[in-house]
Length: 167
Picture (cartoon, rainbow, N blue to C red):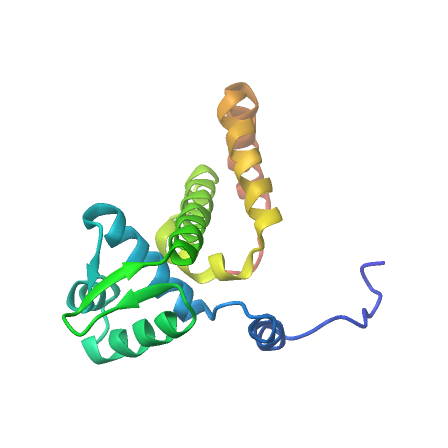
């Protein structure tokens, strides 16, 4: 079956376009909403300047994305630069942060050398079911430390045997 050509195959960009047509946010909008949620959890509101600082972007770029998120009903934004999440924004922002935390914890668990960067690169590609499965696997290893230690030992041994050709 692995060699079968599937009729539903798309490129990464093709899946992104399909998701947008189904009303899902782009990766960039998700990043802005997640960071807005993080800031709002700490302060009850966010400001464009703080958001642009945290995401390392220009304030004008942050303003454009905030306007888009406001148009889509995820937040409210006033002329005094105050950003507040709507109920919809609160719910989705909470999920985005959860998704980020699950992936980053999992990547730490398996010994990833740069979990934050890799989390940012892959988090938008994983669906809720995969996130729940990663969370369950993490919890399984945490609950079964002896199995986790076996995994770590296996990884040490397997790493010496396997040459992927990548450096």
